[in-house]
Structures are given as structure tokens and as C-alpha cells.
Amino acid sequence: MKEYLEKTYSLEPVNSDPDTPLRVVFFRLYDRKIASGEITFSGIKMDKDQFICLSTAQDPEMSREDLINLCVNMKLTKEEAEAMMAAAGYEKV
Image: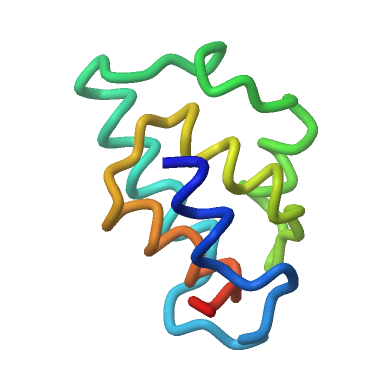
């Protein structure tokens, strides 16, 4: 998954106004995967401060590398990871 995302998405966010904000997409996926037991908070290896920022900021900023690692650590499917990347403003190249 990591290799696919690194090869497929732009190095910098391109779309500054995605249809669905990153925090909304993240929490939809996070809540579902936590509730099902697929992942744990410690398993996603996300810094607590970064989690709070993603939870509360209107337009949270995450580096491409951090976002790709989050997708991998959350065990996202290709479609889920693509939704996260798009919500963060990254586009396929």
C-alpha cells in the first residue's frame, strides 16, 4: 500500500478545497476500525498532539509521508486510502 500511494499521489497538496475535509474522512474510518477491533490507537502510531490537531483543526496539515504512514498503520483498503489522500488535497499524478 505504501509503495502504491508514494507512486500515485502528488508530492504536495494540490486541491486546497477537497469535497470532504480530512478530519471527517479520518474519523469515519478511524471510528469504524476502532469499533470493529481492526486497529487500536497505539497501533496507528500517531502522536497524541497530531491526533488532537487532526481532531480539532479546521484544516489540519499532515505531511505526505505522515499521511501515507497513517493509511498503512490504519490498514486502509486502496479505496479508503485514496479517500484520505484526496481529503488532504493530494491528487493522482
